[in-house]
Image (tube, rainbow, N blue to C red; front, top):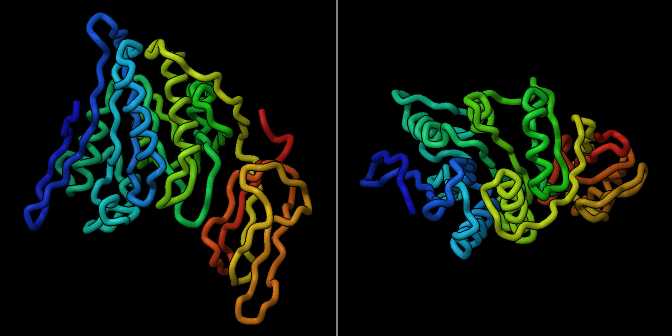
Length: 312
């Protein structure tokens, strides 16, 4: 059932409406649990749109398998999605920096507050993000150290490739995930794919993972895959940055294993026809982030490698 959970009048007879699809079990099947699947906080991150579509299809095709409530929020920042902007247009801000919001705050904070209040009481939330237009990410869950004990077991069921546990000091307290974890809803942040694009294979992988997670929580009795066993790492990551301007031309495959000294790509100079930098792996490990947008300047992030042997 399509429900409007927040509605705010804007200029020129426009409305900022926040929608969710509220899916409940058949009579007699409800075990009392609820999961929220959220995406579209950033308007340039579209990978979650496809997951919302696939999950809606799976639940509608087999309602007899559903034993819990599923709330799907496909576009928390519809204004950003409609205008192809990362933040909230008109207000010039990042929506994922204003949670939990305020009832008496500016428009965007009011919408954020209404979203949090609507999700309050859910058992689990999945906050789906893509990378920006510059980088491609393999499917991963990012968790802060302070929530790792509760969230890592859930993340293992999501059929993703990598769980990255961050130091608590690097986690922004104004995000949706932090706000939900603070009020007792276990929230997992998924990062995958690239900005402004869809990677259908990643969307299908995560959708199967969500159904599997629901199965482990008694919310889904239908078919579910055996999830991939993710690598779990506590922030043992090598960052590769550009030393020179030019265009980055990759010479390796994203999401694969690399060896120390292996060439990952070059930075080419279109003006002179010279190679400004040969980019090599500083360590053995898993290449989980790779530059997608070719134009770079000194300092641009080119890749991230999970160091081999630094997992748990």
